[in-house]
Length: 265
Image 1 (cartoon, rainbow, N blue to C red):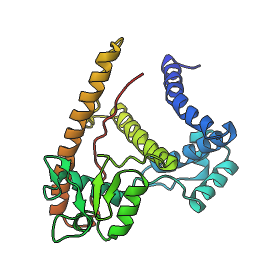
Image 2: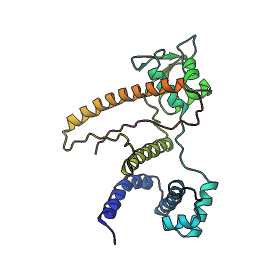
Image 3: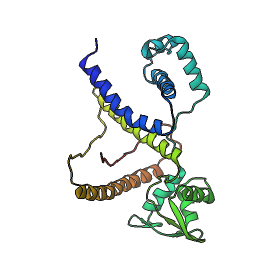
Image 4: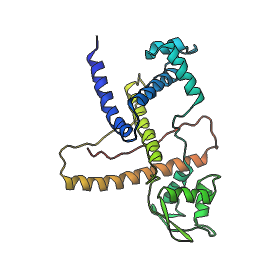
């Protein structure tokens, strides 16, 4: 017998899936492919989050947890091991360069990025890349930022930042990767707050009004983007300063951050 909680969960999952299915249909991903992805996700989550402490996870237990037969679990586990194609939220060197451009006082004025000469003795694009990208060459970073529409060159000797965020303008696959990571982060936070068990909740808040007049909605979008960007830049400055004080490649470190998004439905 299905409980009221189960029915509400199904309705919530349907709400989550509809925008995902919209992307799948637009990109010609069939229901059969989506079903296969769903089976993979069940097996991966069972192995990662439902192991009994002190005991090795077995195919039989995964079968019980997921409802998939043992043969199917074996197939999907082998597929996962041989084709690890999950999107990884790895730090992007280009993002670090853009953040440094906006927050490092040598390359910006009050958060407004300067137009930089490519080469020079100090405040130039080459110095920016060397300081904030690690060991990636200046040419490689410049090519990437030009490719995704973040920078432009007013002449052959200077580089101008035209977008304050590393948001690929023309690369659909990279936009989809950003989408997947952002939505997954939000869901992980929500699930953490659902399953606290006495732990500390993570910050998760919204400001939403209904029936807002179009002119007010447009003005709100402008001010919310401005204030949100300022907050993210302050948080970026803090993390950048603290990380610079720590030992590189700290095995005890973890991935942390804050995401902000505009709601306009």
